[in-house]
Length: 222
Ligand SMILES: CC(C)(COP(=O)(O)OP(=O)(O)OC[C@H]1O[C@@H](n2cnc3c(N)ncnc32)[C@H](O)[C@@H]1OP(=O)(O)O)[C@@H](O)C(=O)NCCC(=O)NCCS
Image (spheres, rainbow, N blue to C red):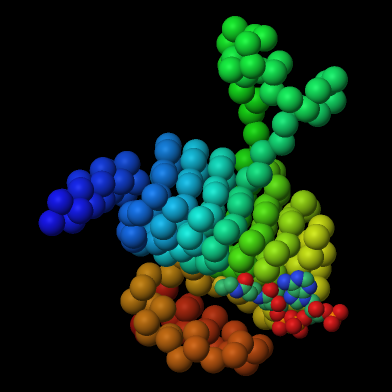
């Protein structure tokens, strides 16, 4: 009983801070974020100074800092996005020159981090680290265990440490259509209307049909 009352209070608090936040609240830590609608956050995720787009799901124990993440992204568990750097060109790696707790300086000093950008419909496998400042393009996939240190172009599949390209999801002509139709900006109604196309393995014929249907839909004669 007490547990459920506390849970409701916490849920209300997080919903106020982050409209669109949905999901289990256990150990979730969200600070200074903006969420669009239907964002799912699993337990023990920590998200700070970030924007998360519609229908994106954040896995358990993920850590996200200073990131802009688009719509319909799937981040698996134990993913780090925006791993920040420390000053390392000075004599020491220790934070004694910028953190008070070492008893050397009087004031904490913070260093601006580069924003990490993940576009739409990106799948990030489990145990991935994305170093701060990287840009991952629409529809890309990052394989389990990768460390991403370089930008990933749209619809490419990258894996390994450091991550390298291991494949591409679709042909260039299909990707061109996907970039044009930008289905992630469609209404739920339009996605529902085309659900069979969404369920099929994508090829050029399906991409062309979807593109035609989208054109009609936007003109209002579906
Ligand atoms: C990236 C991924 C989608 C690629 O799948 P795929 O296209 O079927 O890839 P394949 O199995 O054909 O592998 C292609 C090559 O990449 C390598 N590879 C695949 N995934 C890799 C990974 N995560 N790390 C390093 N290398 C990887 C394979 O060993 C293979 O190398 P080879 O050609 O030298 O033999 C998949 O391997 C993966 O990592 N999925 C994420 C799983 C996950 O995190 N699930 C958590 C729940 S969301």
